[in-house]
Amino acid sequence: PNIKNIENSPIRPKMTTLKIDGGKRQKLRAGDIVGALTGSNGGVPGDRIGKINITSNWSYVAVSSELAKQALKKISNDNLKGRSFRVRIL
Image 1: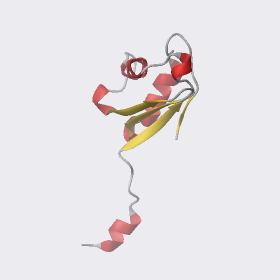
Image 2: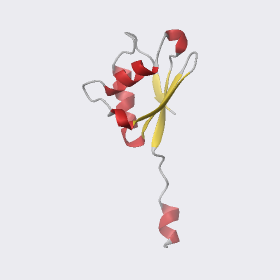
Image 3: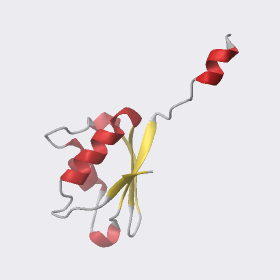
């Protein structure tokens, strides 16, 4: 194999994590996050959403890397449980 090509192309992860500044204390559930991501107007396909981890004050969602910016925009512009939460890519 051509080793020069392997060294020059960075390996991109399949999934990217989004951090949402809301968790169990804000009564967020995984279904709320999936609903916000897959909703109409530029939603992400459900099969592109990975593991969701909800702690007391933060939530982490794995989304397909090529859709990470779209998911960030979607969840930032829409409301979760009637409120807006700060979201960023980790």
